[in-house]
Image 1 (cartoon, protein in one colour):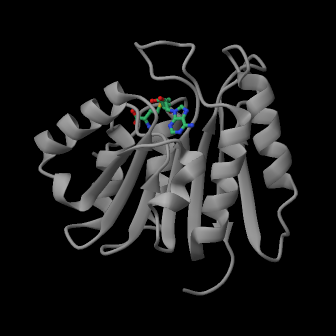
Image 2: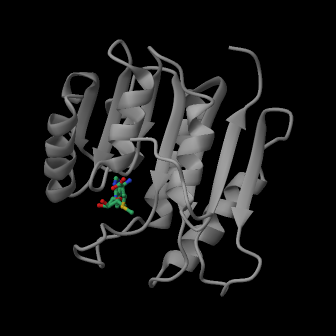
Length: 194
Ligand SMILES: C[S@@+](CC[C@H](N)C(=O)[O-])C[C@H]1O[C@@H](n2cnc3c(N)ncnc32)[C@H](O)[C@@H]1O
């Protein structure tokens, strides 16, 4: 599911191009916000048949749809799907991670009130940072357009800005000529050799 991207407004496409460089066959990775499963499918393709993907979401609709998409692509065997708050990811994730993806916000086409929240998002990011293996990457898409999203994006940025530069590299992308509510992305890499 890695496609040639046409527009730099396609943040998910851009992040997939970047993430692909850091994920190898047999890796263990996490989709912290499974949604309709597009990122989960991408990650499952990257890690290959011997790899493993953990995919979490708090909505049954998301888990069901992600499962269906994985079925269509024949990728179900390598994905562990959980109806679980990503703040509790340590309950199910036992491995070191080569990559983790957070696409924050709400499930498009569904209830816009059910959205990621700063407290659980920050807890989950902290848990992932502890689990990233050296060279491992965390990719986040941040939104600002819906109620509470701006505060969540600011809280995430404050946390990531505070990371020690000798331990993590943090790279952000935002649009310079759009309204301030435009989405942005962040890539975090744990420094060191695997
Ligand atoms: C923008 S969507 C993700 C899109 C998805 N990555 C895809 O490729 O289709 C955000 C998802 O985060 C989920 N979510 C919200 N709070 C969560 C939490 N605390 N833990 C796990 N998932 C959560 C929502 O239910 C929603 O499905």
